[in-house]
Amino acid sequence: MKKKNFTLSEILIVVVIIGILATIGIPLYNNTIENAKTKTCEINLRTILGAVEAQTLEQNSFPASLSKISDKNFEIAWAKVLKEEGALKIKLVYFLANLDKNGLVYAAIASKGPWIHKFIGEASTLKCPAANEGISYGINASLAGKTYQQYVAESAETVIVGDCASNTFKNDGDLDARHKEYGLVKSDSYANGCTRNKQHKKVRRSTSASTMHGR
Image (cartoon, rainbow, N blue to C red; front, side, top):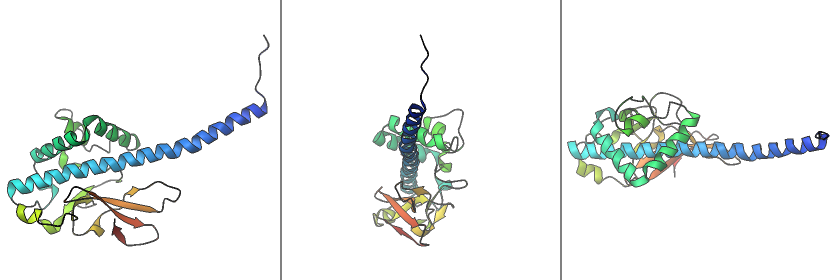
């Protein structure tokens, strides 16, 4: 039986099809990874916020920095987040984010201990997968020392924890715009903050502007 050779036109058609699939597939993949990074950061922020609130209630004093929060309160907060979101969904999000930043999503991985240490390391050193290096999160320094009653009296829109290159911040403008929203024009980046009512707040910075504003 005579072996059939591909014609030049057939090869060109295959190349064009592969090119089209790549054009569609690569942005979809990038979008999936970027969304996973953002979701990972949001889960981290919710965990930190829960730990901050537990610490404030326990000590009746808002902590001055993340280092003042006990591992016990981080683990309590993490257990609540797992209950709300579902462990499988959270593991998938962390896995996808880690494809892009292998080993940098979880901080220092402990060889033993609960799942919280395996996937996010020591709770006080949570990493934002959209950050390059250094510190990933800070807490609102203007609340330091406030009693629990004073804390809950704060506006529900107050950003309590957020993306930050230092352990604390004083206003939304101190947050780092690390995240991107994919689209035809990728000119905007934003920081993630978590408010007292546990809502995520985007603090947006356009590449054409030097100021940031919340949304």
